[in-house]
Image (tube, rainbow, N blue to C red; front, side, top):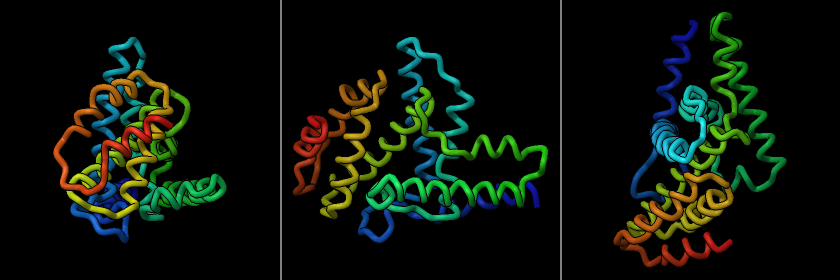
Length: 209
């Protein structure tokens, strides 16, 4: 069936809901998450370029737009579960990569296999583009969790998601991270909220770690 099978499979990302099993005011699909990550990453990369960095834009768009394609096969596994141990995280990644590779082997024409292996691989690494992907991915967790907390959702998981994502972002050494923490995050925290949870306090405690 060739590349048609890949194109058809993209519809499945619209049906996979992030953070399953918890009450949410607003549902977010993996497809919507992937689109937002591309937008965050594009802006983060613009900030890096303003400070003299050289961006491999083709690599950035490849890894950000496809970074969660493997969830078609394994679904959205909650971040606290996925990162509860390094061994479990590695096993999940191995399973995901194995199923993606099997899909490519089964359905993608030989002339494009190398391209798809490269584009659908895990993109988070120590390169500038890989670090930008990591920050953009965590930024979407921050925004999704913040929106729930802001509207009064008291599910503990969103507090944990918000806090842990901020901690992760803070420890990635990029100029764009500095900009996010100093210029963007304060605007977020200063928005009106209906929550009984002290978002400002959680933010300050996370940034102090």
